[in-house]
Length: 151
Image (spheres, rainbow, N blue to C red):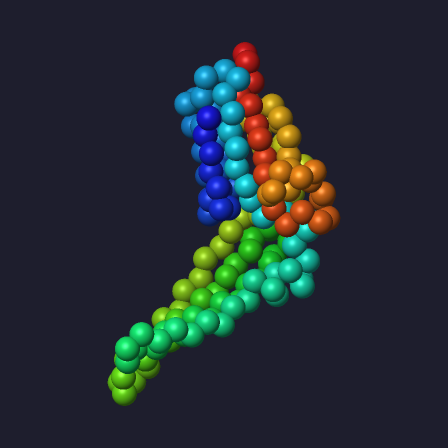
């Protein structure tokens, strides 16, 4: 079996995920299982995306670090982009600010089923992250279980 968790496949562009699927298939025996989770594009409402925002501050001795994160979702491309700002204050020194961003490629359940089928997998099932039945509009994550097709 191959397992990728915590939206790991979302860090791949669609083309790279297709390449990964081909590699996973080649490394599984016929009937072998591939399990992964990813955010569900259909269920991530603007309110859910807004809830991903964070503003954390932590101090240790004389160093304070503040981390602010905001995210936006481009529904056309399926890209969820998060923007991070880290501000580091050491004692009385001038604060240093570091800005970074990263994107996750999101999919619908139908897109995942199509991609896996195209790349030699059968869909065993798609579930909510806790294993309960999957709902296109309510499950924030898709837990997909695929099986390498027996050729």
